[in-house]
Image (cartoon, rainbow over all chains, first blue to last red; front, side, top):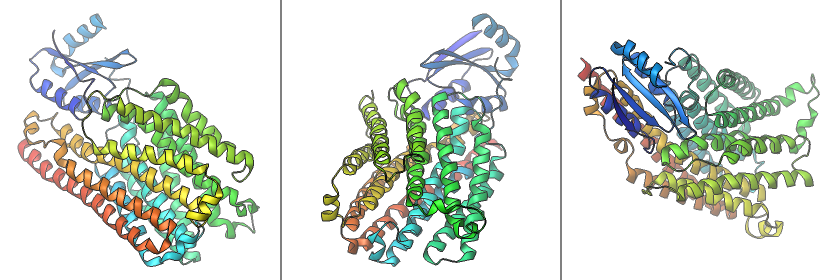
Length: 86
Length: 437
């Protein structure tokens, strides 16, 4: 899968959400958005699921998380990608 | 994918936190009006009934009101789990809290059995329902451990403060049936105040700051030892006051230790603000710095000899220290947080709608438009003026009218800022909904 990476870990709210929204709006079909964030954006998760997106989050160090987001239509490829890369 | 492992609930509707914030500003306007009509006698001592009414309009009506409203929002963001049936819980507990606070203030000014019973039942059931709902979330295994531990200790302090408060209200009715004669000891009133100030308010500010200062102001994180040990040490010291009474020498030593430990927290956040990479001008930080500086002054004032208070503040040490902590420190920190929370909340609720409709992003205002920087600066100036007039009033009570007027202006302005932000939210919401059609 094609990976689009953004790093929002040094941004103050609400900039991380703005960057994520803009990136999702332009995400090519079949691609994964990889977000580096300093904390887990819990409220975002629920909104993603409610609007047809999938996510997977992973603690990478004491300083932050990586969140992978993909369209629900790409569920099989996304699961395979997560299984092989995390 | 870790979708199934989470059982979080949605952010509460925007009306949930905002009803608390708006009520908080209105309660301080009521307190200001009471100060204005009560005259200068209430400044003679903290035990004056009308001063007790003002104090509880402030602590219950403003401080607790804002903090309870913020917790609804904070738990799902930080812990990933929200309060179940949040709208119903908020409607019932907020209404009872408002009614109980008004009845309690009324009972202080014009004692009556009717007002006393209303205060006891409304505050007992209101706080009971709120604490029960929050505890149901806090007992779960949540992320952000140290912050959650701090919130748990703050809520534990609140429980004790509420139980003591209810016993104080009920004492004359319960006396024939239960032996609660210990409440006549003023030490328990001091414990009630100290646990309310440093336990409920202080610990909650500390715990929440561990997250929101690095997050909103992009500072380094608080040191891990501070996040882990300070909340526990503060809670343990405050609970020791039940054994070593506040008026005893050992109790005074414990209070001094509480001030020192809490100063460490204040000095640390002042240092973190200095370590910011992008030092943009931010009135919220000015409020934090003013609050931190005030707390340092409070810690010094605590150790001043009594002769100083006799000469300058007519011997009113407790009233002065209480005023500095409540008004210079707590109001500053709460306004610092509100300056961030008000625009952020309104913006976030609008932003969330854009996930369903990316075209709606075009209608999102800039977050700073929801609370203009110049409006925040004016709020700080008004706060500085009211702080100065409060100090003047404690030294020379004949200036009480000036303080009341300064409070009226400051909190009318805060009230306006909240309404303005909500009005812009409504306008933007209509545009976004029209886009979706």
